[in-house]
Length: 165
Image (cartoon, rainbow, N blue to C red; front, side, top):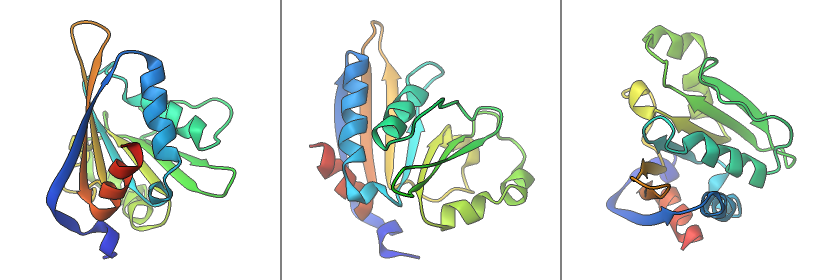
């Protein structure tokens, strides 16, 4: 196991308030500029409609992905390749229920290999996916505001948090 994926002793976290979609985009742009994002695993948690896929779309755009960016809700994973050759895998485990699918689809190999992995609904694949470098939890408030908690679980995650500070 690479040193970047070992849990750190102290968990680092940050909280943001997203009042507009521009706030969502700002976080995506800051993360996209960080070299630590290249082989990171970022998990996204939140209720339906909280903004997980919207954030992923902003991040993919910031990484240079053009064209239609669709949610992998039914396909479970949508692969992308950034202009610089970065492999990006956007997972949506909302409908994930069959553990055999994990092996059959080659998800273990994807998570073990290079590239950026983004996973919505990671709790539905618990016990199969590794610990996220950076966990992002998006909570919709009573108005249009979102409270966003970012928690680093690895040294790479700590570097990602530093990039948005």
